[in-house]
Image 1 (cartoon, helix red, strand yellow):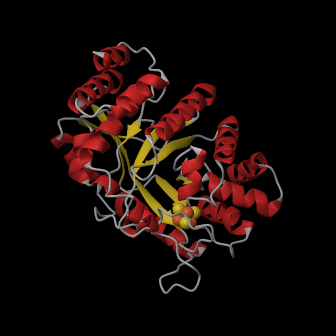
Image 2: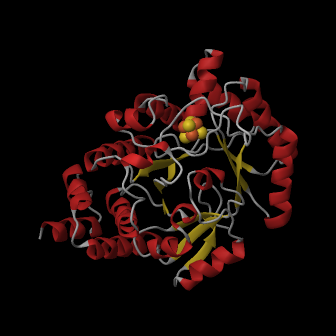
Image 3: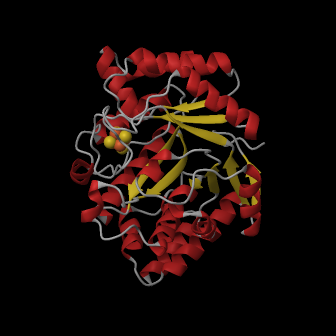
Length: 358
Ligand code: SF4
């Protein structure tokens, strides 16, 4: 009865409160009802359309000074497979993406490499912008902005504005992981704090720089942690309207030090329920993205019936999930994505990073 009233409330566009969110998270029996309600709500908001972006991920270094316990990507400088891309290599990757599949966005992030001077970041943006005046540069997580701010002794706003002047368009809202201090401290003790993440994102939004919003789930977080995280993100969106989409990233455990603490990767039903709850609770997010590199293509297609409306991107390369033990590949062509979305009975629409439809 309680569940039905929550679902009816969401379906009549009334905002769910945090107790109702917790109730949905704790529901174990009627998962299909939650998914069905999320699908109905999504169809009311986005009709039958599913968007995607033609983009390329560029991870410029895997050398990292931090030790996040969910990470299988980082390497030390001495590791045999450590790498740091120079600008020529980055430009070459973008050229390849443009020529092969017509990318219009690059998503650029890397490890927190102690040897990289701030100029590496600024000149990277400038080099890309000089070579590709029209490409959308979606780059640098709040963690990287924090590093630049510390290195230069300058406020976040100054760092972000300088990057924007050089050509940055938007930022990934990654490094959020779980925005609940105790659990955050257990899984990524050296990462920026919740307060720092919030301040950097709000600063970006205040300067007109849009970001995504993310969560890493399926590790050691509690339902209370998830409520804290989603409630904060929803309040921030009320305040700034600066988030373009919400991306929920299931924890891939195989090659990470957190794996002993987690019995298994989140099971598909839990993932579908999670996506559905996002749709029902995040009433100020039009776009909820599924993640085919993390959950696989068939689960991503099924998630389109659970409230998600965005299929993500072509990516071309995806090192971070693969390094953690993900096995679902790194590239889907645009035509593959179109056909997959059609096979799910939805209408594919190509978008840009800011969700303008072509
Ligand atoms: S998640 Fe990012 S910051 Fe953390 S260890 Fe891995 S590469 Fe470094």
